[in-house]
Image (cartoon, rainbow, N blue to C red):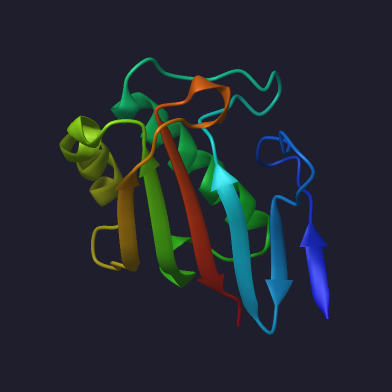
Length: 126
């Protein structure tokens, strides 16, 4: 059974998809943009600022599932420029201090809404 998640603790989907789905005790969060929850506008002008907003949005959506960052098992970071890698890594690392999930980080040609960063998450639900 697939459970679709829609929450007001994270930005609304900007397309025809769920914020997250749960299958067999695993939550798959759609790519999260650095959006203001209420207005849907991009927050932050630097990749670091956008990463902070994204991480807080991810925490909000995970809280809807009654879990936190320690249940995250895999992340994927999409950057509009690999030049942002270090600054994004610093912010990301401040959220994952002792628990370090598996991760991929890639440069892409464009991110929706002109964002500099997008992060997707896979988390375990007990």
